[in-house]
Length: 441
Image 1 (cartoon, rainbow, N blue to C red):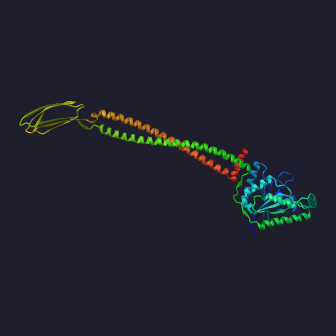
Image 2: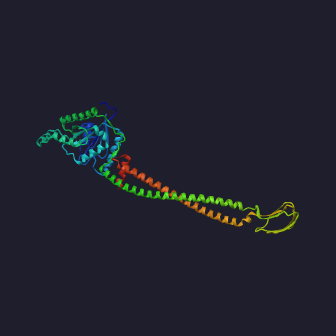
Image 3: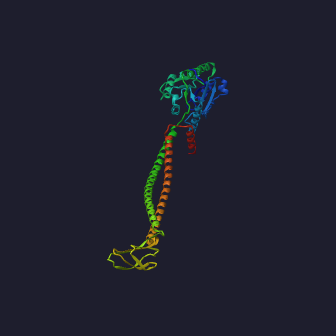
């Protein structure tokens, strides 16, 4: 299959399964490269040399050498952050080589490694996995020992493939190779195996997009997230109880404010009416204080005389006289509170007169004005108290609104955290934050 760009190949496997040695041999099988200046350092002891992800290219080939996992909580997460960053840079992978050391057992660590990468790169594991048995020695002594020990090579390979292939929907292609061949005969055999591996990848496998890969959570992190979710649930429940209490109090304040507002409207209406009454009464306008009337029915050409004395409860400011024109006013005396005199007249149809005493309105209605002034003052005090209570209720409502928003924001943030914690994977940023938390803890 023709491909443009590099053919990226991912090497995975447990520590000590020969990933780096295989990567060197597939990249450049010459002794000068493998023994004197290897691209990927390989272990000379039982301690892994691959501590970080490393990418090396030659020609159209590019290999990604990954560190083993299950080396420690922090180390595994740090390794995976590095792996995912490199994968996101590459954007596509042509093959995933599962490195299995020949005649070694597929232990729990290896199974966990495969399970993790399958979760990390599900699309790649759908069709682009092949198994390479490393450290497959073909020298005469090794072959003799296998025969002498009656080692069933086919059974060893079959059992390993069976264990490695669990969870896959296909049986991966298998190859055997030794990345450190000795002698021309061995080199020829293993270089042929190298060619077969690369040919299979180039011709049979289609590259898989690995852009924006998320970091799968390890069992340790999954358990930690589970505990975090339980803690968050408790925090959310507590916040929801507080929120419910705040909302109840807020609704009560709204009811109280509505009631106070209604009372204020009524009080202001009453105050307006009282002020209107007060304004109407408390003026210097003249009003009728007392009215004296004379009504004498007619007596035939009889002369009539009528004495009068009209008294006012308020100082007299002005007066008005009226008669029907057939009488005269005599001895008319005007005092502060009294007007006296007499009227005389003769008229065949009767005598009619009227005396109106005028006083100041604010004097006449002084008691009513005083009462109204007192009522206005009381209403103003009542309105002031109602306004003060409303302002306090508004401030309390604003305070509760702020607290409610804070609790709602808190709950939203906690739910977002719980949602992230419940997922099987993380972004690189989230994984780096998790690593910091783990180190602090």
